[in-house]
Length: 510
Ligand code: XUL
Image 1 (tube, helix red, strand yellow):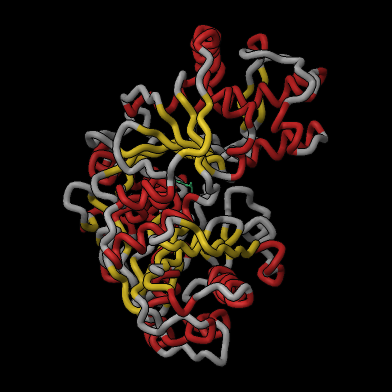
Image 2 (cartoon, rainbow, N blue to C red):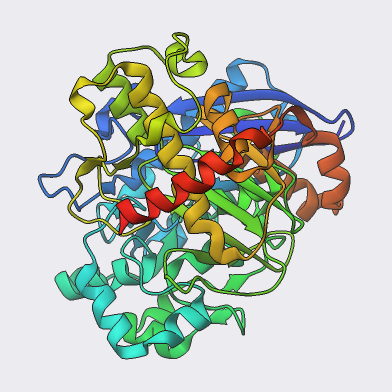
């Protein structure tokens, strides 16, 4: 039995998947929801309440507490943790953790009698962590853009982006110089979690590192000039950048209390989207992935390095080598939840649209679903707009309007990738919503492939652990774990309807 553990530290919780690569199965899973299971950290939806809607921070100690809790849950389930041969993980991207000079010593001497949260508290040089939903760095983005112009996007894969880590670090330095100076290490969520497992400072992988506006994708190293301008002395505070199959270290003896073997290799963690690329078996160019989560993302392995001329899309490292393209739509499930509330229906209603009142194209009804700030296109003052009188519309019309508008936005903003995708793999919480899958198939005229697991980031992390530790090639792991379980074919009769709707949607957005 060769077992590997994948951990997925996402916006709203932490999940764990144990895979058996001999049997090709997931043998145990457990999860923690930050809001429900750790209410003492005051992050009901994964972030702290703040009167400024642009500010979205979380308590990093909550992420550590969730690690204790998820491992204790696996132990209670009698998961064979003693047989785990390698561990890796996935972190929500862009979020950053600020640590002082006590951090390295604390993680190297973790005491099993105490919990992680209480031991790590004295190591924080900043009590809260900005996460990917934060949009409070427009000024810093302007400054970076003014200084570096097009080079920023050409070399780091993205123009200055509000949620990216570089602008966030710059803002912290400007606002609290003393705390910044007191910061010895700046980690991403991914490298912070890997560090507390390995008991030593983990490197940052190219997948997640590319979401910082700091990594030069041509040299695959921190861009010295950009890093120094972003924040004085930042280079010395960053862990080194490394490929995704690097071993971050050996599991600290702290975790023997859960039955894990001390010294088990911990592979460097990556971002949730790069991990999902692996967990959906889409590491080769030609297949796109749509991940329907809190935010929706559209991504694919890249054939040739290219950047989005409109500046919305990003280039990240592909954990299997090379690069991946990605576009993030912040109003994913956030918008679906808002419309669900508005229509006062259950998710089952979305899953079947039972009243059959609407058809493809919805008679031209479209919306801009900016319930909260949006990253594609950038919307900092959120407002929902319809091209019809939505007040009088029935639930099915409103729901179809949202789902079609979301699908059209994905098609519009993925065109820079320059590929006509005929296969799209689907993952994430909403991937059981059959009407949405048919809309996506018809809008893209592509076959939509459902895979067995919805936590593709956690599975991807476990597969990455097997690849990094046991050197199992990804193609073999994909054969075992990521076969599609259902295919939704496009209806060619709906092509013209959605080609027209796309033009309409583009106009509305303009
Ligand atoms: C990607 C992005 C989000 C987060 C949250 O750029 O901001 O997808 O990774 O999961």
